[in-house]
Length: 408
Ligand SMILES: Cc1cc2nc3c(=O)[nH]c(=O)nc-3n(C[C@H](O)[C@H](O)[C@H](O)COP(=O)(O)OP(=O)(O)OC[C@H]3O[C@@H](n4cnc5c(N)ncnc54)[C@H](O)[C@@H]3O)c2cc1C
Image (cartoon, rainbow, N blue to C red):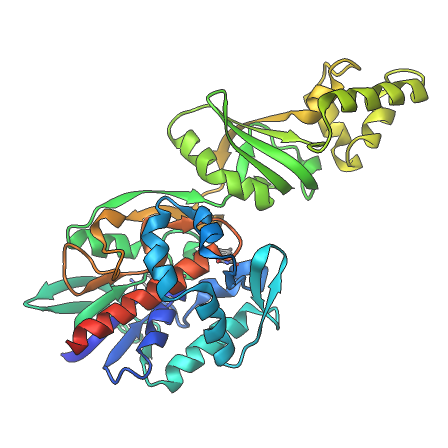
């Protein structure tokens, strides 16, 4: 059996960064990826532009990590957002900053991010074995046995002193993230915290096709669970065939999905005029009524909201009159009854329990020499570059810890 010092299982963002950190270590390292190419998910990030990271300082960055920001602190400081930018630029790909401290490649092509990292690893002599699916991992004495199916279909096994598990979660399974890592982790006694889709579209009771494509900017969105507001956000939201998504829809989806799973009543309220008090909207409505010579909905609503939503808004509020229009504009309410699942969500919430992983090294507390990084763990971030940074930081820390312990 071929022996390696380190085997990295999964060639996504976390696995690739772990492999990149092994460059120059003089260790015998293999990265095993079941797809015929690495980083298939990187290719679809940022709508094909790859929002590589978010350059906010840690005190701001941490507020976008769930469920345990403290777990990531050490990894973030070990290999920070500026370290990621410096690394990507050192491979010859310049980065640029956009609104909200988001970092993208100047080329606006996620392919370039993936290709530059893979090229760096290949040049550095770390072996990448694509089209190779790991089927199980066991431990014999102090070595890990990694059983896999090679590209030709043959069953093969290799030995490794250290294993870094970077198999991702369950979102967009077509990219290779099919939850295999949970099974591997459980075999070593790890607990997998219940998973659920996050950063996903919330489905209202009735989806009106006329709203599809409607982008509402500068609105406030409140998420209601069992009659109480649990989250309020400002920004923009998008209506699609899947439901309510866009920046705000995604941001509230974590708590929304969790509420639905727990059998709670989930509602979304959109305030179309968050900068204006309800009384001032009432005054404006009064002025329009005077101007139009009566409460003529078809003429008044287009003055207060995008034309695309007028009919739908009127139908959803059949009792509209001068006295309640302002209140409805400040609280356009949707009963949420479902959500888009793993097939099209951005991130998997839940995963391998953080209680059983050292935050200082990313090593398993249950099986020495086994490390975790990226989405396979019970960690997820908001949209804005936080998730790739979590994968890069934890991937780098896991690899550096494994390298360090081999040097002792
Ligand atoms: C549509 C979309 C857009 C996104 N956009 C952004 C963005 O712009 N910015 C951002 O920060 N985050 C974004 N994310 C989230 C981000 O892509 C992920 O959080 C991140 O890629 C997770 O990296 P990972 O390495 O942990 O897992 P993955 O990228 O899922 O990689 C896991 C790898 O392991 C391989 N694998 C799994 N099982 C096996 C096995 N048994 N044997 C061998 N290999 C295996 C898989 O094939 C896969 O390549 C986006 C996600 C989606 C779905």
